[in-house]
Image (cartoon, rainbow, N blue to C red):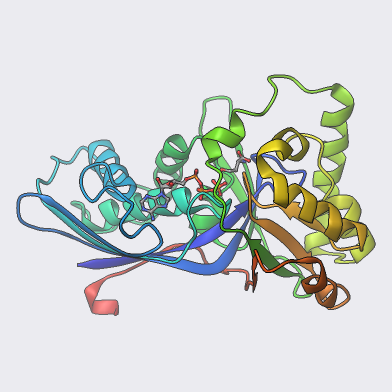
Length: 305
Ligand SMILES: Nc1ncnc2c1ncn2[C@@H]1O[C@H](COP(=O)(O)OP(=O)(O)OP(=O)(O)O)[C@@H](O)[C@H]1O
Ligand SMILES: N[C@@H](CCO)C(=O)O
C-alpha cells in the first residue's frame, strides 16, 4: 500500500488566468493498493457521504487513465482510503489534487513501482495526463511541484512549468465561504473574446505580479499586480459575496483576488496588511492563514513511512 499526499492550490492569482498557481499547506491524503476484484473507496472529511465510491470516483478515474497510458492491464481491484481536507468546488484546486493523487498512485503501483525522471512514466507524462484531465495546467503545476508556478501549454498541447519561490514576507490567507461554484459553471460565464486593451492590461499585471511576489513584496505593487480584467468581473454574478468581499478588502488596501474559479478569496497579506483583513470579513467566511507548500505532491512507499 502507498500513500499519496497532495496540496491544495490557488490558480490565476488575479491577472494570471490559466497560467499562475500557488501551492498551499493544506493536504489530501490517499492510501491506495491493488487488491481483490472490485473498487472499494472510503472517504473521510470533504466529500464524505457525497462522492461516488466506485469507478466514478475522480481518483479512481485518474488511476484508470494512467494505467491505460502506461500500457498496463487494468487491475480489477483497487482499494482507496481518502482523507480529504481540501474543500470541494471552492477554488482551492480539489479536482487537480484528486487527479494528481490518482495518476501518482497508479504510477507508484504500476509495473515500474514509481518511476521518476527517465522511468517508464516520467514526471512530464504525469503532468501531461493530469493537465489533460483537468483541462488547464495552472492548478496541476503547483500541486505537482509546490511553491509558485508559471505554467503554459506548447503548440503540440504539452504543458510546461517554471517554479519560483515566493518572498518570505508574503503570507497567503484564504477566506472560504460555504457556497460552492464548480469550475465548469464558472468557465461557462467567460466570453469567447476580450478587448485587446484588457489582454494588454493583464499581460502587464501578470508580469508585475511575479516581480512583486518574488522580489519586491511591497503592498503598493501587490495592489496593482493583482488587478484583473479577464475573468473576475465576468464571473461576478456567480460569485456574489466573493466579488463584494474582494472589493471591500481592496478598498482598504488589501490585495485580494478570487482564488481559482472561486468562490474562495485569496489575499497576499504582508506584515503591513494582515490586521486589515478580519474586520472586513463577516462570520460567513472561514479565515485561514496558509503556508506555501514547498515541494508539491509526494508518494510514501511502505518502507519510507
Ligand atoms: N478528493 C476528491 N475526490 C473525488 N472527487 C473530487 C475530489 N476533489 C474534488 N472532486 C470532484 O471535483 C469537483 C470539484 O472540482 P472543481 O474543478 O469544480 O472545483 P475545484 O477543483 O475545487 O476548484 P478550482 O478548480 O477552481 O480550484 C467536486 O465536486 C468533486 O466532484
Ligand atoms: N484557471 C482556472 C482555474 C480553476 O480551475 C479557471 O479560472 O477557470
